[in-house]
Image (tube, rainbow, N blue to C red; front, side):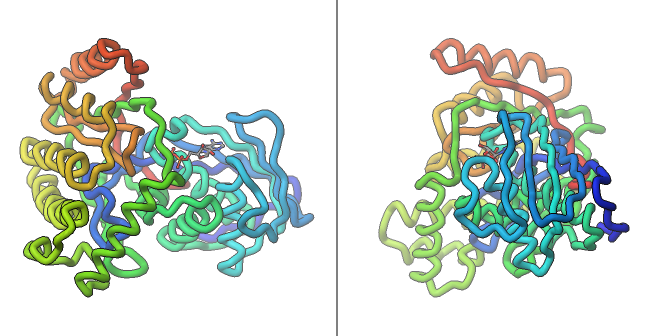
Amino acid sequence: MTAAEPLAEGEIGVWAAPGRVNLIGEHLDYVGGPAMPIAIDLHTTVKARRRTDGRVRVWSSISDGSVEFGADTTPGDVKGWGRYVAGAVWSLAESGRTTRGADLVISSDVPLGAGLSSSAALECGVGVALAGIEGWDVDPVEMALLCQRAENAYAGAPTGSMDQLASMCGSEGHALLIETASLPPTVKPVPAHWVEDGLALLVVDTRAKHSHAGGEYGKRRAQTEELATLLGLETLASAPPDAVLKVEDPELKARLRHVITETQRVRSATRALAARDWTQFGQLMTASHVSLRDDFAVSAPELDLTVEAALEHGALGARMTGGGFGGSAIALVEADRVEAVSAAVTDAFTRIDFKAPRTFVVAPSQGAH
Ligand code: ADP
């Protein structure tokens, strides 16, 4: 982001930050591993008006009324959806960038709680809007980490950095190869040509609710930390394949197996993406799902059913995306099979009385702007 002139009192600007879909490399962004997300063509839009009285007032289309707090807010002050906004204000202030005040009007076409990172889109949208009205020049990776801090320490969800990095750093026509072994993490855009090759990335929002503030996500994090300590490793993703032999507890062994094999799958997927080998890429996506279902145990019946139905109807690969326990799945399908696969998944859901899913195609898009 380049620094611009700060807005004058009462002046208005508009910023937008996208949701994301992770192609492969799941639950690795907090164990020092790689991930390969894309920013998607669904956005949270933040219309911001300069104030100078040290107050922030926020309206969102999801809620009646507004939320108001001071620019010196601290974790715990603001609850509910406003805590993602207050979290971004707080985190930026912690980095020495205290806003002089703003009115923020939020709208979004990223479905909420669907595992497509509407919360990261909100934090990043607010982050770039505040930077814009103040004229701050904030590097996108730094902004992503500040927004991750908002999510962790203010909103109370112990997630890694992938969601905010994808929302901040997305690039049209590219996937992002994220490496979290070092801090700050590195982000490299890699060309993603499936559209030119006649394929589409179908998202199935299963409408099975997930929550990262819930206990299971935190439990996985704790288990990976326990494993890293047990194996004497700084980052669990660096564990060699034979490390599984050193772990006796069957549940921990399975968690470690996911981390090791998923890391290897991202390496293979990077090669497949570069070679435009979609058969191989699809197989890796499906293998990732199996690992998340059986070894990491973060899938849900709706996600498994989506993957099964999509594969049965010709998808090259399919997997849950995001933290899991509900949310969305993705399938790589030939463009002219999108309707058939969507219909097959919907039909499978209605046959066993699951709520009808929402299906749509996404494309790799630009990050927050
Ligand atoms: P996900 O990020 O996968 O969509 P989360 O549960 O992490 O799911 O975040 C969803 C929450 O983020 C919502 O329940 C709401 O509190 C907040 N949120 C996201 N988008 C908006 C928005 N446009 N307006 C207000 N709150 C939002």
